[in-house]
Length: 105
Image 1: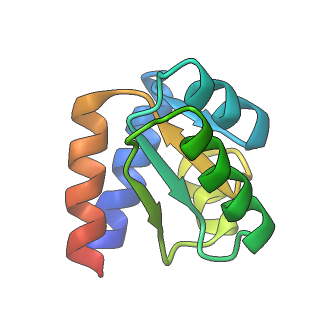
Image 2 (image 1 turned 60 degrees about the horizontal axis):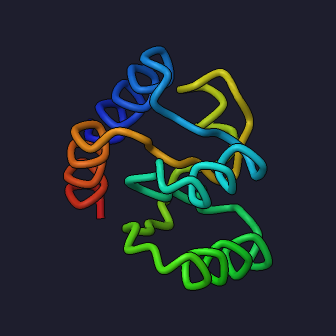
Image 3 (image 1 turned 90 degrees about the horizontal axis):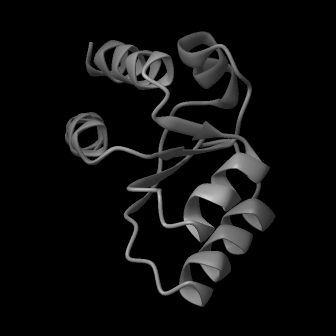
């Protein structure tokens, strides 16, 4: 049930233009300090996670990072784009998605 709410919120954020999906877009959002939440798919690679952790440290960002249980395919279903990493670039969307992720865990 909560995963459906998470998928709906991700889709809504996508339609509002508040997501940066995929490696390059997420890197840009972190570098330009637009990202309010960094979300990894559960099946994304360890190399990708290490790369973003180093990027966050390098730019002294205090972005919350979540490794979710949702897969890349589920993200594709919810947002229409296959991505292993997503940044949420809006404070309100990020708070709601964090609360939904906490409920799922």
